[in-house]
Length: 256
Image (cartoon, rainbow, N blue to C red; front, top):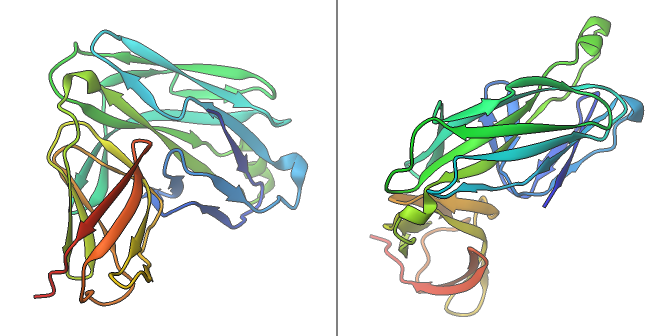
């Protein structure tokens, strides 16, 4: 799967199929979510980047992986790549710089129409349990636009990276309703990928939630969705896709 990223020469509204992650002054869309960008006012200034793959897995037998970055625009595209350790705390994603993999090259300028291969190489051997990271691909400031004083919207995209997933216990998921929050706990070892949820009340009415988009729950972690209304008075039925499989669950209210 290849994502086409439109980077605008002037600031424009950019939306994703869910919430954004903030890293410094850049905006990062969750990996594997579609990006929809307003058309640039000056199309020849726009830079476009294809990224593939959108998910990286290195099992215990693999020492490295590659990512292809293709500049499909008509001007050079300066890019920086970095690795971040990925954890979850209080139901939220947390990121910290990591040297668990060597990422090379880290700063590059991709010529128009060219493809740059970025390599991820292990710095240590395989170990028990899944390790999870995000590879951040940042567009750097274009010196020509900086000198001319033009505004430029810059994006960061993060690609999930999993190490030694084959040496971790499968995900073990448990749904619960706590007040006006749906919680999903993963007591297993492997990360689970959740693509949107649909919730219905006991009477068959739809119940909306905040941040209803692609999400991950890491092993030993819990994520949550806030219901737009108050604590429900009856059981709720949840339908979703987890790792590509349809899942249905029922949760009972706890409005104490």
